[in-house]
Image 1 (tube, one colour):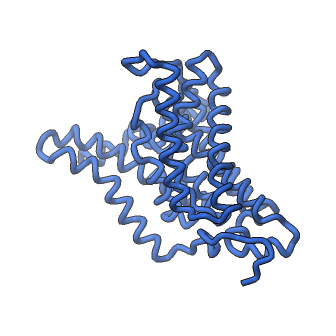
Image 2 (tube, one colour):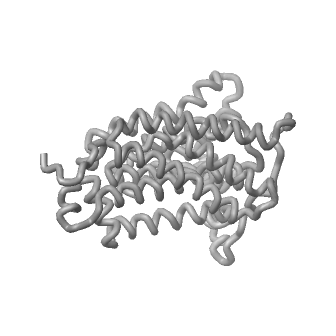
Image 3 (cartoon, one colour):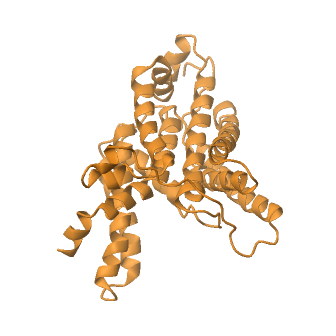
Length: 314
């Protein structure tokens, strides 16, 4: 009964959507990369760098939307770096991605300490504030939980629709999907496969960075070490869970976020009867199980992880 009451509260659903927002950005970004045939394991570091870059922009006197654009730009630079090694040089996507994560994470902490060497506690900024959409926010249950979020959450939901439309209803989206399925067919049409893959990785990395920026510019008001806390790796798993489809990626992010929001509230109800570590691990365990189940039926891009070389017909 306690769990049922939790599920029927607007606070639970509002928290679910808030927790899901960085996962939506990150999962969409990874999905675009993999649809083009490139695995981007640099997501954890790119999200960390985006969190620091967007926050630092605002802390140094910039506006919030400018900070968001700056975070996206930094993400694109790391996407360009990743694609330079994997798309053009054909190096291991796994190794390069992990290297990007280590580089971006370490660089973000280094820049933070260089610019704020005397900071003993995380300095704060004025983050995005919740905005209630007129009329829609008055709807019962749905209004207070969905239509009273911050602008970045609305942006994440819009991105789901835009990316779905872009991938399945535009020539560019078709080229991206074919670059991950049959790059030779793309080359036969006179389209530069390397450019398509590079563009996809840069756009995807920008979305990952924006997902990290949400943490410091919307969910919280400060940057601190370890704040991404494995969300990037969860996004990689959610792409598989979603079978590389934007709509299912949204559902997967909401599922994980819902379990995470639920475990916090169940801890409060259960008290000390059950060790809190059990609740902390529950979202990750259930996500792994869901990924294993869905992965058995998932149709992955056929050219994923396969380097492309011009003129190679083998």
